[in-house]
Image 1 (tube, one colour):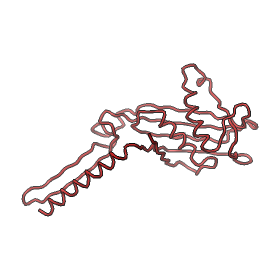
Image 2: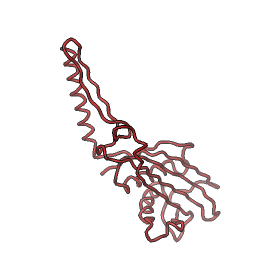
Image 3: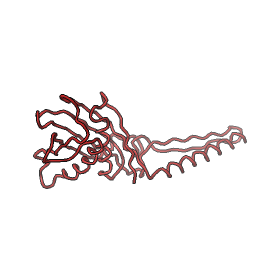
Image 4: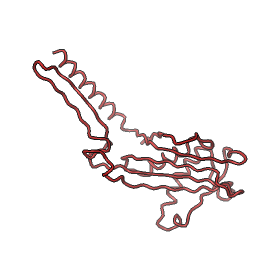
Length: 209
């Protein structure tokens, strides 16, 4: 009887945790793997340094979403102290981004990338009782795909025509609204600017509604 009551208490606790998770649904965290490289000469730029956007030929096509991506990146660049001023630019900045669904063949079983949720209660007369709970899946149901997204920022000093900063962020998330996720990834890619930590690192950015 005591074990049964303990199991019931555990179930109530799990239900409370589920309620807390539901209450936190107003915020999300975008997780990115970030790699950055810097080679400043003679010194990193000071806050207020100016830049202009530079586009490849493919990014100048009428159907290219480059202006939208640059607007997302411009906000992230402003947060690290850079000023968009094409007429008096000291640097050029090239922006890239991609987004595509992850093939289901790379997922785990049951339609979930990490396995399906499960909760079970067992017991009987003379056998005791037990409870178990596990989960690891994206919100949105079994048909929610993952999206692999990547953003890149390359900065070139106009006076010397040398590349001085390069960074990229890669993320695989179930979120459908691409623009807010890309905006968070640009923030992640520029984390630590202008002297980023060496080596790949994970950067989490919270998105608020």
